[in-house]
Amino acid sequence: MKGTRAVATLGINGQDIPLIVDSGAFYSSLNHAAAQQLKMKVRSLPWGMEVNGIAGRDEHAGVTTAERLSLMGGELPNIDFLVGGNDDHNGTMGLLGRNILSVADTEYDLAHGVVRLMFPNEDCAKSPMAYWAGEAPFSEIELLRNDREKKTPAIETIALINGKRLRVLLDTGARTVMSLKAAKSVGVTDLKPTGRVGGVGQGTVAGWSGAIERFELGGEVVHNVRLSVADFDLREIDMLLGVDFFLSHRIYVSKKQRRMYFTYNGGQVFALSKPEPKPDSTEASANSLPELGSEATAASYARRGAASMARKDFKAALADLDRACEMEPQGADHLVIRAELHQRMRQPQLALKDLNAALAAKPTHAEARLRRAMLRADPGKPEAALQDLEELDRSLPSQAPQRLQMAQVFERLQRLPEVLTQLDHWIAANPHDLALAGTLNQRCWARTLLNSELKRALEDCNRAIDLDSEQGSYHDSRGWLRLRQGEWRKAQADFDRALSLDSKIAWSKYGRGIARSKLGDGNGSQADLEAARKQRPSIDAEAARHGLAAETTEGADARPGSTTP
Image (cartoon, rainbow, N blue to C red; front, side):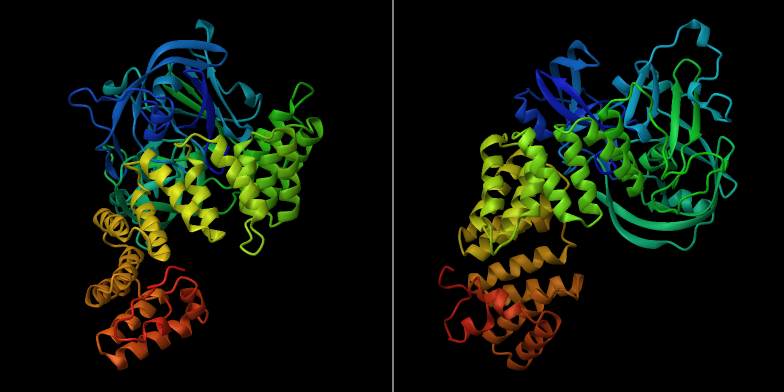
């Protein structure tokens, strides 16, 4: 588990490629940056084929062929992958979908960090497949058949929500979410907005959380929980049972029987719910997990520790990760996972100690180096972080997903030219990504602060707004760019729009104060500047660092930043 993502590493054309395990994806895919990095030729989709997610169609999807796919010690030739989707910002480069996951029976044991492909013999044709349960009870449900997906069958079944039947898709690539239409049909009324929700394409849909009284699947019942709700229309699917459900259960999907067997692991069933009590009080608590056995490896404990961290059971996670690091002190991967846990437990010095040890054991570990750069990013003492960032810049492919995070660290260090370099890399490799609008806005803002390439900055701001006109920060960036160019009226219009979308943007109030001053509206200018300073007392000093402070615009012909900072 990386965060709340189940990640498997496959070999594609001789390179290790991390993919999100996604039982909801009918086919495996690579994102555009991965296809570029692997120098794979991308073809158009077959006529009539579309790739759809909860936020609509991926208009830029294609297909490519891997000459060699390494999986489970074997190698398969000429395997097709879709090309599309978004950068997940966790180092992954695509999805491992059902064309591979459903070649056999599949066991999802995410609490131990494992997915197993199982090939049962004929004697198992009618046997219950929850082999790990022993004498303990387990749940068993029939899966729905879909003639359109015979080769890559989805894990679909019926669940009861508030006593009403809903069609659910079990999807390791998502968090649990119910459609708005389904939520209304089962009587959910107290919807609380949670922001926008994205999928495989560039679109987003509105999201909420809502309370339900009862969720039932296979005889298992969960009472009084909150679930995510989104305004999606995904074929007949009413609800996605996501990775949070998988982490709290061990699941076996029998392809031949078209049945699913599962047991409850403990902990919270849904991401927004509180932990459920174990039905049998004699079972081990989540914070006292059993030994894995004499044949268990350090990697086994590390995987289980990462899964416990994903479930926010930090005590159990630390116990397993300590064990993994004791068994394999030079295991860089284990040390990096424990460093992440220490960070989440607000123990930065312990995290830094683990990252130093990981890089001593494996100097090429990109995640360790990036995490250490983030920890050491002090604008007053930038040297240590810059060393890590410069090494990453030398060693990583230009299409590497870490480039966007590197830009953010450079920004924290106030190294704007380096920010632009990293953003250039990422945007070139991810031309259709869901995060493209925000990244274009970030590049526009960096150029505006540098007072450099303002024409290109305007192109970036315009593209960002074209992609998503409802983000106040994008109009704010263009407003400041207009101030750089001395276009006071256009600047005021952008700041007006930014504040109509988000009235709390102090920078837009400050910028509009400058624009109003240049347009002769002294009272309006003073009101905006005072409001901005009250909300953000340091704003004059922050703006002055880049030649943008209000006092630099006193002269009749003055322009913000007329002298390059």
